[in-house]
Image (cartoon, rainbow, N blue to C red; front, side):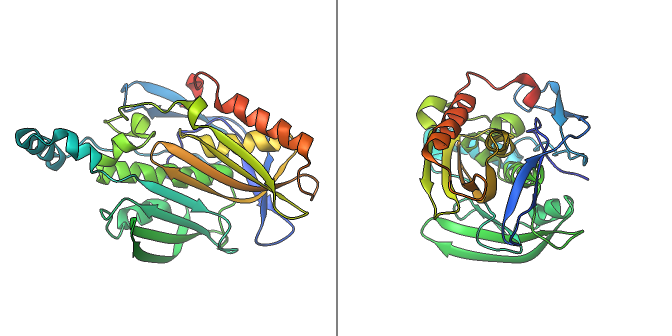
Length: 297
């Protein structure tokens, strides 16, 4: 299958919970398969370890098109080179596991620049997915393309953490490929695009973690941090490593930032304060490490 996972460090997947509308993550022992991944920023082949029985590979974004080059040249001649970057909207990709009990909902926004995204839908089909519903709506933030996705073999919503991350990276890679100007607006532009972000996000400043009660049976975990390949899977790994169950959630990519919202529980109850502190400290320690290990790309 043709797909893309650059985040490749964990062996996790979701299993059905007690209710059809919920799901939970658990770690599994899988045979490690090695897939070479080419980083656009250095053009050096690196080995990506994907802990999953299915092998996915993301095609690299194509170089900047002649149209973009001409546009840059035109901006230089007009003296508007700096204005070109400032006018590029922030790309947003939302993966929503909460709003529909029967499908994974994906929403993509990039100002008013997106078309019907037929290539993106075809790329998702290559992952073994069906787009069962698609619609477009407009608001003050731009044009929103929304897809409801199910697995082709089961007709059910996506439950594997790795596949959810593969969906995210595939969409972002397609966005960079067909809208090269988005590359500099995305953290993944350094991995998949030829124009990396001009500035790096300070992880210490960008990282925010809050945990609150969400009824007697679960808590709401919110994480905001600098985005990078594999983040969704890594977050779930950290949470489940301390025996906390992830029931459902939403993962948003907004430019250089990632924002995750998880409904979590411990033994079918809301997380008590001491365990909340353990969870928050574990996440902060992991997210604020100085650098990502080389093998994770």
